[in-house]
Length: 583
Image: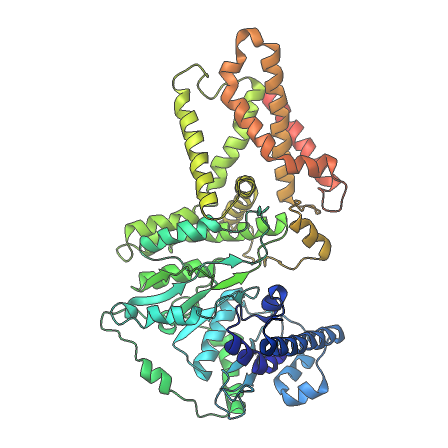
């Protein structure tokens, strides 16, 4: 942050002068080509790029040393406090104002005032629950209220950057609208990703969700808060109820000034980020982001809407913010496990939209929330369709109408229309046919592992067998993983209960499929095909969709294949299930 605060004095004027997009230097220089046809810009472009590369080298050297230089320690004493820290989970509040926008020296190379920039690491002690992301954001809300108290708060995830410099202006247009602006509590931008492959092997684009379902949310009463790329009105995060007589006083905000010096602010604000500050208060309950839920963003959004505020979904042609999608299968499954568990927690608690939102938000919005809140419960139906028809095929039990029965037309109609509609949706929003097929595979994998474990974990927590845990989805990958991701080769490479379940179900279906085909061939005269056609079709479809699992189990020999232990366990479980079904 310190290096960036210095570099921005050159970078911001360069961006404004040449209308640079995106404003992230890493993203810009990764894709931009030196403008040789424009001598003035080319000269400045080369200079700025060289300065940026020098900055990256200094950061890399500092990282290798594991400590900051004495020069920086003397200039910014706050950073020096890290020397006396015993653990990242046990330390005092460390706060440093890197740029104080009130000072005359806080200007870029063109003399334009720079915004205030503050580094904060809140206090953490082993005996206090720090409430993960929600706790960090609440500490930031309190500290910022003392230093700047800006009426609008933007939050983005740490792996995201601004892709559209007009996003702030666009959001303010909603907040400052003379007719309806006072009703708006937050503006939600879509979540976009910069590292997606052409066919999106892990279904991480969320295109249908962001391009279709979220606008539907908006039309039914306002989108949910998804935790990133969101502009909030400060009052909504402070627990304020919406009132028709409420009117934002923008002049009061613009004329506000803090008279305390930088050093005084640094000392007085530390208490706002202390562990004991929230004891016996409404922070995490009525104030700030909500606690005790792994999807604190959705829960907070519901609470804001129930207090009468309106939310708006804004999806500009140029995406406002871009981040990084998971680059391995396990990363994606773990991420969706956390989401589904947190969503189901909301549905099964007093914060359920049907309870909390009763007569406060429209019924259609309550129902729309259930589309996501019931992700975890969907595992039950999916597991039934993956397991039961296949085992019944193995046992010779027919579950569907015969192929000659007119009732089979209803099943065929639903299958064809639903899949065609799904494919049309996916392609309409920029996907490919292969990308849609990958998305269907991930649909199956998430519902049989992520959602199942999310559902199971929630039940166990309610029974007191496990404790809440916030699992961070790692997005950093080494070169080999990145190369396989770009080649759209599915990454396994480790033992996981999720992989064991996927491999077991895949082997179970291939065994049942072979058994079904054998039954048809052996009993061709008795027209077994007519009786089991739909079950064989379903089982064959599952086998086809699980081809990457079979490759990882038996054909691939690279480090990203499925481990031998997973192969042994899944084979044993699949054979055991078949034996129980037969005997």
